[in-house]
Image (cartoon, rainbow, N blue to C red; front, side):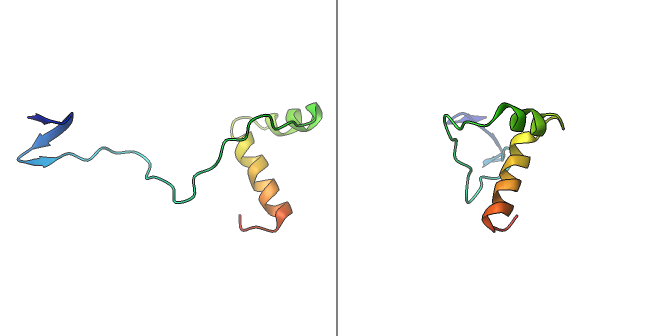
Length: 65
């Protein structure tokens, strides 16, 4: 049975899986400019380069990792 676009079995809606919402979601920054050699350096290690930049900035700012 469908109610409001949800799947309902025995009167209870099924919960969808997925990642829980973050209490402190990251903010998108438009027009952040990086030197080409810096960008090439972090991208050379493959996917996850944005996370690595974020971790490096947190360490430099003295924030928890």
